[in-house]
Image (tube, rainbow, N blue to C red; front, side, top):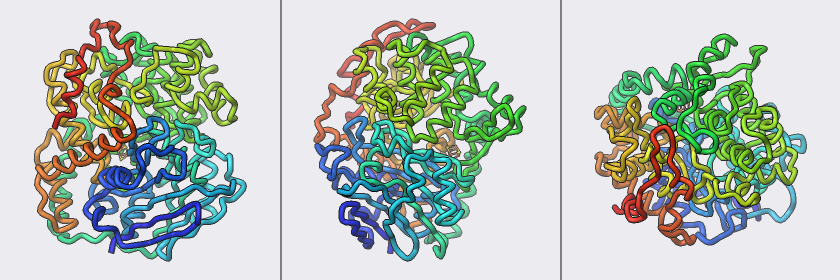
Length: 575
Ligand code: SF4
């Protein structure tokens, strides 16, 4: 029997039941989004008692399938006001699957002003007052304290000081195999966890067995073919393991789609100073690691260990989007300064995309000068102090832009637009505009350049084919986010047919099903419709599926504008 756990933080009641029929065939994002659509009142306050936070591993999480260790977290987002699924690596999801836990739901708000640790073991769930020492403590140290208390191998999901303060850019962080940090970053789910007074969830899988596989031989054969697709594709087999996602700096700069100085241009002269090639050389010179997996079984290993000048660990999971936002977009030409900022984001517990874009908006507002690395770090450190300015910065680009009366604020549905200029990479612009998640490149990575072709080539500067590309990738992504797979597998499975077939066959072998590719597409559509339906009931209309007006400006070097009509944008969700 798969367990479905409900933890009521108001009464401290815990209910462990057999997974309800309506959720039994779901996992990952399919489960979290359909659960939220079913059980959360769309008009509720995201930080109030009616919101619910749900954790769910994917269909293949905990198996030996490569790259299958992601955890989906879902709730109504305090940042966007709409539905949110945000997923993370780390060790938590695989432990849940091994313990045969389909989902953990956190409900209610305690009346008392205390933080708690929720402990999940094979014997049940307990709610304990959080150790006083970890309140206000950064995530790196707090994870050490919790693993000293509960066991060195326990999985930990935690909110940092930003989550305790319920800031709308707060994330939920998860310990990785080295007890460093991965995050369910986007949408402010850390504020939801903080509102429920949960400082941390600790999971101990001692006594759990292996994940049950209905047809082990078929699973093994499909898994081998799937691995082969990942290792032979140039992006997942070579580019990402060697340079991480930061390989994209030079690729996007070349394509004219690297937003620079708060989206004033798509190219700059100094991008290589912060690019993946420079970063890999720096890591090697400082005896770090250029490749690292954020969970056991990751074979792409896009993460890394970035050391400081004294060869001491500084950060990992150091992603292109963060480096772009503080580097090109805020004009900070200093990879070390960006790495210190990335560590601070992880430690204080905020979405590194949201707050990095906010730094650019702060420069737009004249709060700090463009390109000033020292001022940038000091501004970010205000979040931890909980000063009024720090709370605004920790509430995201939309909040800061509103406070300072700006119009040049790159957000959709109040979530910051990431690292691909929508005028020069038009397909991903449609994804930003229409995904129910708020601006999010991972919701449908329609990034076509002359080097990178995801889901087939379309001219990134033209409109032709972009609606279909964004739509198809959003559908495929919703399904992939339900498997527990890292989204980066999409590069391989969209290009290599046998990789996609092997993925479906692994799910069939795990559960003794007979799904086809069409069933996977149907699942993706069902998820998107549930998410969009939730948002509509929360008050969203097509008018919210729009980019900010300033994208009507021309973007150098191609002098392109955002030129989709409203009717064309609305076609993306016409399925
Ligand atoms: S490829 Fe990167 S993000 Fe994906 S699972 Fe591996 S380390 Fe994590």
